[in-house]
Image (tube, rainbow, N blue to C red; front, side, top):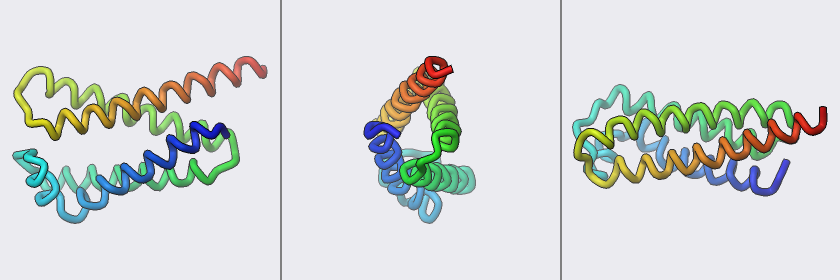
Length: 130
């Protein structure tokens, strides 16, 4: 596994933990502090759980040596971040929002670009080796 992929996995683990844990435990406080309202505590906790699950998969990817397992994790991360970026952008473009949702979009979109770049690299390398 490349050094850059290991770094992406590690950064994604840390960011997902930092955001996922408070979203699961105290979503109202976190989102209120960020100026993000209204807050649905149920879906916010589900998002927290999803972020923690992604943190776990990124941690497993960071530790993995099996190329097939890593490729599956990269696909999962890419699909989640691309769909999340599209969903966030759809709302951000059509209504005024504070800075926090825009920052969330920037972070998710940056991970989407990173995961897709890794995925394209993985696919092109596997085609070359066939």
